[in-house]
Image (cartoon, rainbow, N blue to C red):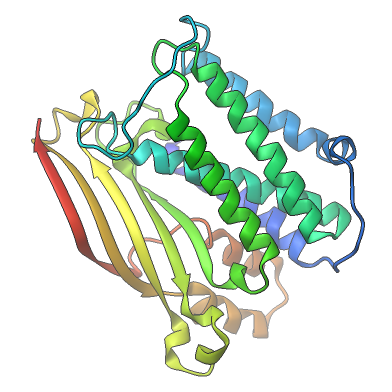
Length: 292
């Protein structure tokens, strides 16, 4: 399966989950951890199976004795310029959103679902990091755990703070790089990560043209992996600001007034997690380069 299709498929599954959850009425039903795990047995089983498959096949789990690895955050002498750290943040955020909304669709209690989703996501990602500790390619990284916790925290706040879900998105945009060898998860050159502030989510702006726009803060790296060397003369890490169109306001809200199609709801939710190319412009805030 092409890498871009895998990325889109993951966001699509989440969009279906979120749409179903958003149609629920709030309730006071709470579950114990055991009860919540039983409700999510297929979801947790599927995610755990996927993690174990990737760990054994791609991440060399079990190939070394346990060790710690200081990965140096976003430095130019790191393995990806920090893109892997944002990958951890976004992946954990996506996982937490999925589990939280799946549980909410079963119970109708948003705060309890957010808490249990955070616990399960944190546990799964700690499992990943613990097994990374016995990989010759990785090692246990406290930086990864901090970024995992950040992704979980953002999802938890979005699901518990009134109105925040309509104001803040985390998104990824992926274009397969020339150096990719069929491993999209670690094809860091192909990714843009962005945090998005949606002006239409602010009540005072909903009657102004500003509601059609969103502000972005993004990060991109290229040339850091050894497979990138034939295609780049320099390593590059860029922090950028952007302004773009809010598809919810420009496209999907008008469509929802004309149709009750679930496909419109799914598409609206999908683009809260995946950044559509070509509808935003950016300006560099900081660009770092280093010769290979």
